[in-house]
Length: 550
Ligand code: AMP
Picture 1: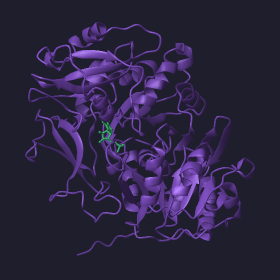
Picture 2 (picture 1 turned 45 degrees about the horizontal axis):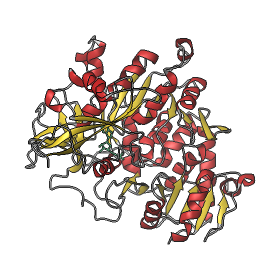
Picture 3 (picture 1 turned 90 degrees about the vertical axis):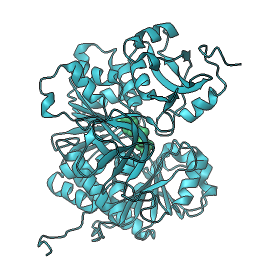
Picture 4 (picture 1 turned 60 degrees about the horizontal axis):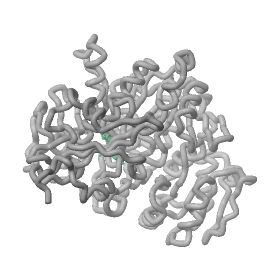
């Protein structure tokens, strides 16, 4: 027997309609560049997205067509999020930090028909345009008086002209909720990037997680500083979730420097923010120098840290300097991304702060909608609470089934699990602890050493700016940890000092065999440590402990 409830589809356009109806005056603050701030509202986003959808339709953008963006977090990018997906086309957010050859590759792979870009990316567009095989139009995200002079193989259109020319009302189509809505490519440290194709249904379901109390707890009370880019996994779904609950959005544009973030948080009375650890390291370089009175001007309550493991030092500083709670979240492009979220349980009530930081330093518990499990090298599922790390697998309605261009289900095993490539433990309370990417784990004498754990401790040293740990060749142990450190500017620090700091904090056999200092570490386009490059760089490195090596 079927239930007798309404079957209204879960569509992205309904999020915007809701925000425009119930939160029309809530502000969207957009810093387009260093000197231009545009203040808008959910009501205005809705009316401009409708004009934009009409204009794009006029340009020949049909249902299913891909529209690419090379853009920072701005109101125009937000309007594109809603207009393109809402009309049934697919928004392809492109990471502008990829190499130009990779950008050309993914624009062609996705067969993008329209390429929208911020002015700062005009040189990049000029560089790749001639290699593009499907682009029929380019849209510069600016007003007429700022239009760049570019020689492109297809028409160059001004975004604000499009909006001005678009008819006022657009009836969002009643799409099937499984229609593709947006496309995001993984950064692919090896091989070509792969496209993850989200649907309206997966996107809307994922929003509820962001708004749930034991999710990210986003609500109409929040003013959100979106310090995670809209070109990476839909900025963790927040541009959609903010419409669902009517939160205020503060879009910082290209400047994610510590000073700018602090000013925006202060001036826009932000309660909530999200970003990767590198962004927060930069934030604290600025914020720590301020006097307590200046810091007291922030109203920050919660900060989501994800994308890479949140070092305990970041969790502690947010608490001690701002009284803000760090929610660590784990996920990936393939999981939309929210999958596990670090909230507390009743049994943590009243625990010492130090112990609480230990809980927050884990990657959180599975939220409803995402099943998680750890499997050993023989593919056996490990029981919860087992202390052996294994491969983390996930499944659920906002987890990828196949990459763009593949048959549905291609990436899943017989039980429907998607293998994440992350190595993890799940403790008895269900908290996940990511110990490594499977490719990065250090195998020393048959035992595994977590590079992430050592890195996180090392960045807690006051003289360390950033740290990476890789397995270096050792003739007796196969691999031993090599700690590569970028010191803070202008400080003198020795390897002995850092090893002494780690001494009582990790098991003896986890202690790095050597500490080397470098000026900077290589990163991927999404800001993660690029360990393939480091391993290549240190491939012939001889550890001082390897006395048997020839
Ligand atoms: P991406 O698809 O670029 O978002 O990268 C996803 C990968 O980032 C995951 O598979 C993890 O390796 C890593 N990652 C994301 N969040 C965390 C976290 N909180 N702790 C540790 N690693 C993380």
